[in-house]
Length: 154
Image (cartoon, rainbow, N blue to C red):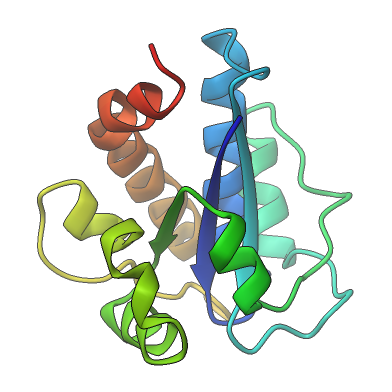
């Protein structure tokens, strides 16, 4: 089974939203037995729930992240992942500094989608800021879906 890990700073906004959105796409495609998805943060407040803004943005899509708890990124998670997708270039470089051997499987999400830039952190922003971030994540996940589904051998 292939494993994808999303990485952001605190693992309470961007990466859990990306995890939830991709997990839903995987379920809709019937690939749960071939792909798993997780998320973690480089400076995660371990055990903290997803932010209220992230919860609201997912609820608007009929999804829930109420059970999510922030997880610290570890070298073990990097090692076991088949694909590591970060929200920013800084996140990607931090991972590669600690695990240079992961260079062939660690990408910025926008880079993986063929775009430039970072997914900006909505933390502390309005519901509209979270909604914008969630919509951007949906678009990026749609853009990378073909590559992701190839990991499942499909």
